[in-house]
Image (cartoon, rainbow, N blue to C red):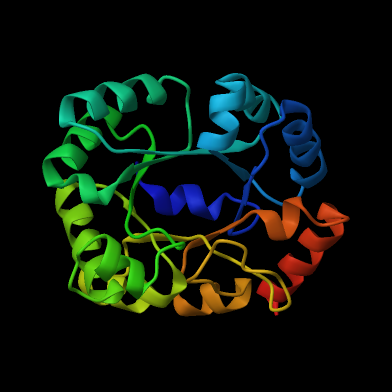
Length: 237
């Protein structure tokens, strides 16, 4: 998919992550925020609870779906999963870049340019200690993310999911036309929860993110709509 034209049509560079597992909660959030954002992220938490019904609901409200299931399996299995997912008309879809070039290329071929396909680099819940001690990867996070981003581009995907800390290194490796979606967004006074590599909305945009994913900072707020308005104001300023 040629994503530049698609991005220009969005109401804002914000994607709201529906970090809930109750369909009614998700529906309320979509209704409350659909005037401010065009894309809602459906992850494994919500999808395994509610299935495709939430995708249909979001589409019926005139919004787009970022289906973030992070496929990671043998190439044939990922190819089949992507092919089945594309039939649902999702706007964006993820696979794990660590699955390798062959797996990602199979995903790309199955997608047939009908969806924006992204490679997930290193989860924002992982820090240098976890990367080295648990995963036995000697490279720094910045080096490893850059390497995964390069593989993603070689495989033909549109871009990556990566934290704000790695954005400039991905740009150096993959160029300005490579899509970067940044999660781990937190307001200055927000709890980081289980995230370790975070950034404020404005910081992520200034670092070069094309789109930012905001979840609990909005969805758990006492007034999601009011908090969303403040977020848009911060980005615009």
